Amino acid sequence: MPAEKHMPEESQMKRRDFVKSAGAAGAAVAAALPRANAAPGILTAKAAGERVNYGFIGPGSRGARLLGRHLQHIGIGRCAALCDIYERNLKRAMRIYEGKEEQPDTYSDYHEILDRKDIEAVFITTPLFMHYPIMKDALEAGKHVFCEKSLVFKPEEVHGLRELHEKYPNQIIQVGLQRRYSAYYDAAKRIIDQGAIGKVTHIHAQWHRNTNWRRGVKDPSLEEQLNWRLYKKYSGGLCAELMSHQVDVADRMLGSSPKSVVGVGGLDYWKDGRDIFDNIQLIFEYPGGEKLLYSAISTNRHIEGRRVPGDGCREIIMGTDGSIEITLIPYGDGMWFRDAMKIRMGAEEKPKEDWVAGATVADTLEQGEGLPIIPGIKDLNSPEIGFVEKEMEFAKRWLYQKGIMAPEEDKDPEYKELESFLLDVLEGGRPKADIEVGLQDSIAVILANKCMEDERKIYFSEIEEMGKDKVKLTKGPNGRRA
Image 1: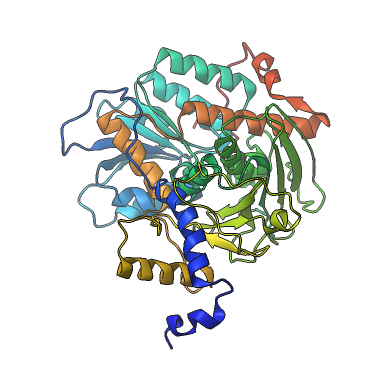
Image 2 (image 1 turned 135 degrees about the horizontal axis):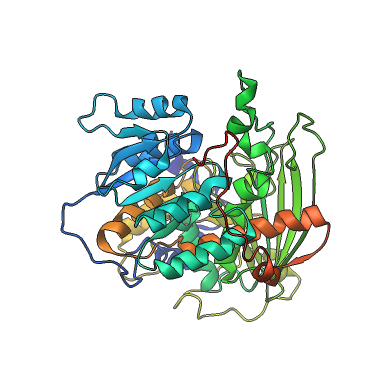
């Protein structure tokens, strides 16, 4: 039976109140649709129809996903070369191009890719400890760089990459923080900036899993090479692999970077030879007094907030007038909540009329009820919306509210971040997830790990004195540079 037939009985709000409140949120969300990058171009635009020849360095588990799921379908780029020291990774990546007219060349030494004059850009998805050495060589070879998070591994690499960027300012550096390219997170940012949830005071973020994070290794000599994430000399652990995404969300939503971090971590369950923490609990403090409370564990996947399918991953952004719950795992999902208890306790301030012109938020939402954040949502209060279109939009939102329909991104944010990088190389643009975003994110990872290791509160200003004059290349577990 069509869902619309049950709409009046099942809805917990009157229809006109739902339209009114949804329209208010919708006006803010509508303005958050993806728009062209307005940053000034830093490169000379190329002729229409040209493609970017790129090399791909490190097509392991993450790299193979980016190649197979996304890059092979992005026509403005061409994979001209693949490089990995592990032959199995190369063979698996080459299967993506079976039967295709254009086949990438394969290498075991990334310098051979950098030596090629026909290659303009490189994608780096190697283990974290090799990010900076390869980026350094790539920038010095005149290549544009897309590098997975975290951008750098050590304090001295923060300073080293800053100096390289000053030396080669026209070469693009983009970090793999795909939430910067999500329509959901764009919408959430717009809602926050227009005051729909009041002053943001706290953010809770978590990425909980119930897994040992270990890959099976038949040859013991390959243990560190294949399970590099489990060892401090190669990996930033849970901070680098998971928290990096979510502290970047907090930075973006608050419009600032943390001033301090304190926390505890432990290696308390997985006693299998690893030396990274298997659980971390952190508190970041921001200049305005805002706090980010962060949790990552590997023994339980339960999620704080609404019960929705996912991977234990969620950000909850709390303001004086409401909250936003949002995630990108396993698909985009976001809800906006009015703080109804504030109304009942008589503490609500006079409604603000400036966060969305000509609209107010309905006071009919009960505590725990919310409105979906829908990329592309229309403002139902707009005089340009006709009766039929308004009825269809209302029905769609009601179905979202009941969980019958799921909102969707206009494009997968992973696809968008890769496509955007190639477009910036072609047309001359500045990435949303640029070097400044990437370095600030890396600093948060480095200092979060240090605060747990040192068992003390760390101030972000300390990074300026850490690791200076220590920039150097690092050899991998097999004694080679790549």
